[in-house]
Structures are given as structure tokens and as C-alpha cells.
Image (cartoon, rainbow, N blue to C red; front, side):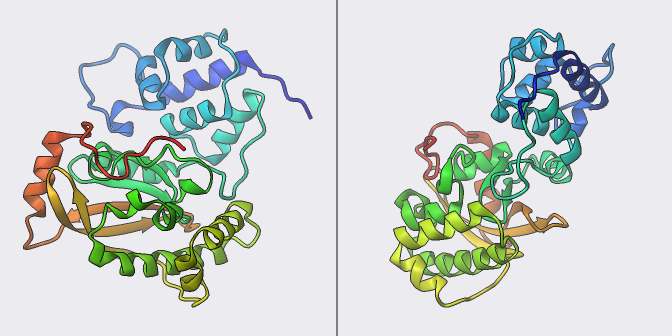
Length: 290
């Protein structure tokens, strides 16, 4: 059924959601006193990765129909819950996204927690290892991880098919990483019996990697609730980090926070990484969209 865009209601909905948000709700400094409530339009545009002019035209009911990708970015920027996100899609003349693997809607609660971490690398991933959001420190540590498409959205797929993904870890850690990634994926797929993305991901991995197929056939299952990671960074060396994991109630999304392991050089290395930021340093994993 063809659904038309409701420009007037879309504009009103965007404006009202923006006015309800404060800068501190999205990890921005409060700044000087504001004459009007909520975020400024250019701040929403910045969070959504679009031009301020484009967003202003949407709020003025004179913009073009946003794409599903643009609506997903707006829902994330405005911290919409799932019902609000679906309403946004309907107002823009698009069907609501599915709730399985293709759904990029990030838990607003996890996003608020992600905003709170400014000194430590943190990211939000799906249970199928697709990176949904990163803070600046995570981009500096791991490279940009959110731009992949298709099966390559999953880090597990890239781990078994792309040597650059393995370059983030010392070679002596590769065997362990392979085992725990497959065991974790098995647990996630079992919770998604009718998910076409999960099924496609496993079939693609079995076809692309004999190593994955062998590990998959072992039927090892283990959800990763915490871990120790050694990350190779070209500017600061090997960082020895603990990775703490917080999951949503549905267990379909996870917030990963990297903390320096006690007794290691990681504290100083993270401080240096904070100074360096996410400049182009040839960081493994900073691959272009594919």
C-alpha cells in the first residue's frame, strides 16, 4: 500500500521531539542559557549527520521526502523509542523497519549511556556483532565501524573474511578470538529463529571461511558478557583492556566499554589516544564502506 508523506505532521513531530531534548541528554555541553527549550536545529543536524539546511526545511514542512537511512539517523539523534521511530517512518511515507537483523534502531537507554562515556572507548553493537554507534574514543581506537553494508556489517563476518579486521589484535590472540566469536554468534542466532539476516550471515560465513565452518560445527555456545582484549593501535601500541558488556532486556543490543587493565600501560595509552583523536593514522578497521 502506497503511503504519502505528511509534511505538516512530520515537521511538527520533529520540532516537538527536538524541544524535549536537552544538550546533556545527547552528550553535549549545556553551554549558555538558551532562549528556547531543547536542542537547536543545527545540533540535531550534527547528531544525524546531515546539513542544517536540510533539517530546517524538514521542520518547515518544505523538505523532500527523507530516505529510510536519513530517518534512522534522525530517530537516533532525537533518541526516539521504537514506537516513536515507527511513527516517524509513517509520517515520512515509509513502512516501519523490521524488528530483526536489518533493524538499526538503537536503544535510547544505551545511547544515553554511550553519551556519558567521554574518557573511555565505548560502542553499541547488535548481538550479531554489527556496530550501531561509537563514541569518539572508540573511533580513535578501532576505526570507523558503522559504515559497512550486507554481511560485512558484522564484525564476525569481517573477522573471517578480511585480514584488516584481524590486524586489530596480536596474532597470538587470533585463535581465541575466532572461538569466542563463533560461540557468541551461535547463542545469538538461536534467539533469532526467523531472522533472515542471521540466516544469511551464517550461510555467507560457511561459504567464505573453512575455519568458521569447522568452528560452527563444534556447536560451542557462550555469550560474551565481559572479556579481555589486546588492541593493536599504530600510534600508541598494544593496549591491554578489559571490555565490560551491558545488554538490553531483549539481549539484541550491547554496550561495550573498554577500560584500562590494572598494572598495564593502558591508562597512559588511552590518554595519548584521547589527544590524538580520530585523525587518519591508518588505523586497522578504518575501512571504507563496502
